[in-house]
Figure 1 (cartoon, rainbow over the protein chains, first blue to last red):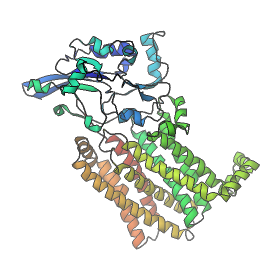
Figure 2: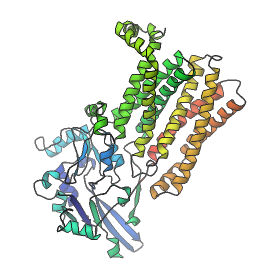
Figure 3: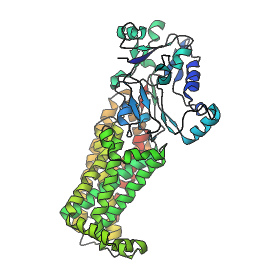
Figure 4: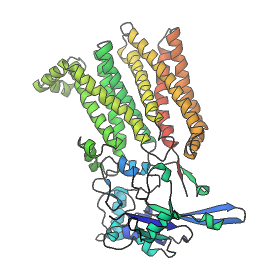
Amino acid sequence: MTRYAMVIDLNTCVGCNACMAACAMENQTPVWKNKWRTYVHDNEIGTAEDIHRRFFPRLCNHCDNPPCMSVCPTGATYKLDNGIVQVDEATCMGCGACAMACPYDARYAVTYSDVRQGREFFGEEAYRRTRPSMDKCNFCAQRVLNGRKPACVETCVGSARQFGDLDNPDDPVAKMVASGTARPIMAYLGTQPNVYYIDDLKRRG
Amino acid sequence: MDVTTGFFTQDLWTWWLAVYLYFGGLGAATLTTTFLTDMYMKPHKELVLWGAWSGIVMLSLGSSMLFIHLLDHMAVIHVLNPLVLFNQPHAWIAWGTQFIVWMMVWGFLYSLPYMLESEFFNSIPVLKNVLAWPLVQKIGGTCGRHCRLCGWLATINGIGTVVYTGLLLQSFPAVALWHNPGVPLLFTVSAFSTALAFLLLILNLAIKKREEDRALRVFYERTDLMLIAAELVILFSFFFYLQRGSQSAAISAQLLWNDWGWLIGFIGFGLVVPFFLELKGVIKGWRSPAPIMLASVLVLVGGYLLRHYFMYAGVYARPW
């Protein structure tokens, strides 16, 4: 059985935002409204002269116990056997309960006007979306099912994002997770997330 | 990584969701209270007609607030289908939608026999013809014979709706203010308190049977007084829970208890002032109904403020 996961190394993310751009083009997100499936937060940490910038990439954590799925009244949010949490735009009525339930701020709304503008922005023939819905990262399932990596992973210049299979003990991602080098965020909420982070602050002292 | 924790409120479910929760709770509690009163305390045609129809209007208004803000209005068909409870039994909106729909259906059927004999409803141009249809007469007769069954089916769905308004917020695990068992309790107590305040206004302003309904009004006033007291106790425990809870809880506490609208508007004028007005009414009585009506209006406004501030004070703590 395959169980997909992502490891993000905060030490090597340089904040170039190429992941955001690649994701936006691959998944046709409404960038004109600053809505992204993945977003890189730019923070300053420390005081006085001892300050450094931290770039924190954020995306759907494809939780094993996803609160967005349990609150979804129509069943539009569902989980594949490989661990990917997806949204069926035809079933989603866009109540927003998933966005309220998600601790990772991974959800955003695609409105009727976004769909219209999407046709102009990405081209009438290329644009895939037909209806409004709540949207989120799906680990580029359309690429992964064809043996490719998610767009953000493929484009990352610092190799900060790595994608792999937790059920394959030889996979580098599985090894980093098993060793505790990469740890999930907000796991205390019981979400059992599948995006793991390698901390940068320990190395920086 | 907690040195970088940021605190965020949300701007997705704002005042309109507070209106949905408010009218959902108030409407369902109003229907439930009038039907229980009619079944077990005192048969009261006017109260049932006022309670049932104002409750149905409030439930419709509240539901329309959610419907208007849906991204895809056609997809609402998926939650209107009763089978949704088998497909998504863990989603409270699915339960809530079914509770609201069936509450309105059974509420209408319970009030139908009274509508058939009501002079007012039989004087409305088109409606009087509809009420005269043999099928409607037959349904009304059947509902009249099985009024307890209709009443209890409406009551079960009404209580379900009231509790659902709190369970919905409770299902969001990241926000400490919402994700705790006190929320359904607080919203349930508040919903029945506002419903009794609303019915006191109806009894005093619309039905106006001063002597006949005296015992009923006194009962409503006493019950409302106890519910307001219970609400104050729940809020007191919320205050201490939030003070010493997670960071999300502590920030929510700061947002609420440093806000004059919450402190003076809701707790002061929405609970404490009506509590003392109704306490005086219960202990010594008032010469005029005006103070109780004032208390009722304050409780109704306070009920909305509670939900409004709850929506805006929910805090997400995130590691960025």
